[in-house]
Length: 176
Image (cartoon, rainbow, N blue to C red; front, side, top):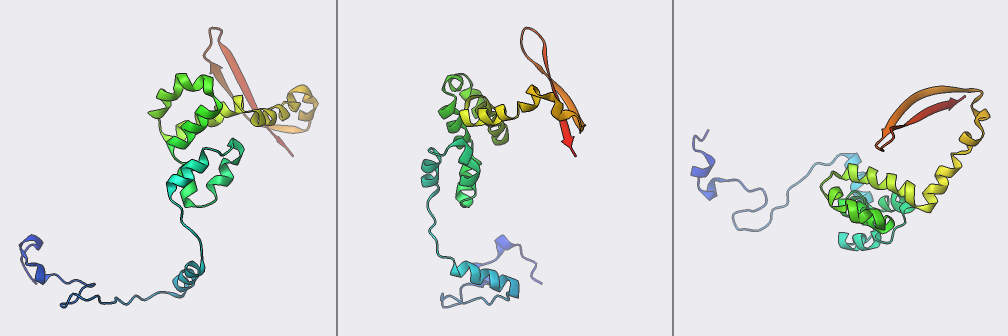
């Protein structure tokens, strides 16, 4: 074995798999399993275009909140756009103009998952389609006889930060 360190050796002493002594390319043989062959054949038969991520950011500015999940499933670039802070802050500013002036600076410093959950919560309070979804669940509150043959699975509460201390109680029921 050679006792010299790598930084003490000459460049000629290193083995390069890709270049031969006459600087022409040498093809390296790879042994591929049958699963990898079928995957590579599938990838080779796929004809598609890779668009730059900037284009997906521009398209994302026109996505409605209810279509965010479908947009994220188009390709890996759109998924990357949806998981970015810029996307969620722009969605927040688009649908919460009054509240956006106050909280935009605070949101920029947070983590993506915190921003995403905050934006989704505020969309349920301000976006009309999501408000309709919440109003449909109010049927249990109007007619509590639905709960007769159900089982309570979980109970929790939260305090509101208001001058009067208000508590919200949440019940989760299982309808067997």
